[in-house]
Each structure stands twice: as structure tokens, then as C-alpha cells.
Length: 124
Image (tube, helix red, strand yellow):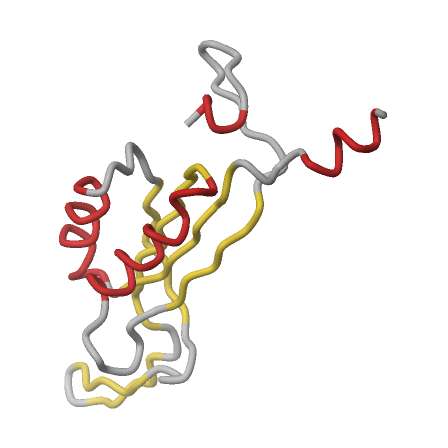
């Protein structure tokens, strides 16, 4: 019986990792707050994808910029909200230009609120 419990654990909560353009952060935050997202973690990152960086001129010399500034959002939500969150981020962060970002959705095996000990969906 214990094995059956372990197999179903983690299906209640999802981790959404999104990379977006920095200037879209506030707009995305407002849109997510509007649909009921109560918290998120934000990190300034650098990376590249299809755009593979670009070149810039600084004091007359040309430099290759291989990593592009991005914002990484980490959002944990009830599984029932995951599709709505992904749709909201996609619509709000989209500019139609290369480098708009990516979104990944992962199962969370366990979530615990440190202060109260609440778990899974109750912890968020």
C-alpha cells in the first residue's frame, strides 16, 4: 500500500519555469497576480537559444555577446492552475520576435511550508 501512495504523490503541484525578456517582467507579474498566482521567484540570468547572442560595439571595438540577459521565473501552483499560468505567461511575454523565451512545467514531488508544516497544494 505504501508504494501506491508514493506513485500518486507530486501530482497535485507543478513547478513552472519560464524565461522571458527583462522588460516584460512587470507586465507578466501583474497578469499572473490577476489570475491568482500568490508568489514567484525571479532571477536575473543570461543565456542563449536560437538567437545565439549578438555583437555590440564598445568604444569603437566590436565584441561578441554570446549570452543574452533574461529573467527566470519559478512559480509553484496547484496542478489545476498550471495550464492557465502557462497561457498567461505566453500571451503576456510574447513579442513575436526571436528570444521571447521558453516555459517548462515539471511535477513537484513535495512542497512544504516551513512556518506551518503544510504540504503540497496547501503549502503554496
